[in-house]
Image (cartoon, rainbow, N blue to C red; front, side, top):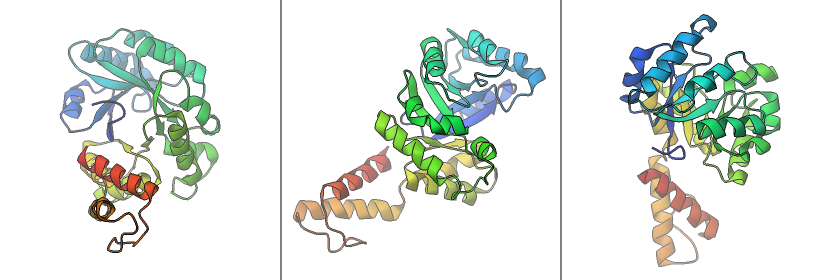
Length: 268
């Protein structure tokens, strides 16, 4: 699946090689082998070797490397360069377009994880940088950096900023952050649906149990699909209004385009 089409992104600790294949078989649209937060400092070398060996032996996945300011960043890139099976890299604490361009030149497509105040401040520069294929939102880290709660209201501006920057840069809609409640499907679906309402079309997941709920939340609701079909049906019959639509709104070009977008995402 292309980076643009991937909705569910599943993290797997890079030190747990026995879980790599299971993650690929889980139904996730994209698998992220994690060399950063999921791996303790003393296990970085082992995780790096495990990821390299698996990718070089027929596996295929994305890899989240350590951030550019860390002591492990350069070794991560050296280990992954030229490895078959590397779909691309996620760069955490993305702040510098120059760093991202250099990573992309060596590794291919880059997903820029926006999770610091500086990264958010520079999000438009990051989004338009060479090699950046998509933006993702590190909500937990950003909340900690800003000193706010990881709740919808304090992070609304940040989420909207990623959506706007992605649209202006011509990137796919961004990927939202994780839900920490692993086995609460309702919470995962609620978070995903809220993110979708803001313009996100992807979600980071930390356990396979979250995938189905995340996919449901990111998909158009049945009522949206019914509304979109009614809009397009009525447009074919009359250029004036949709009297039987749920909201009874006038059918003009933006309304028709929204309906088409809903049905496109429904069929993907």
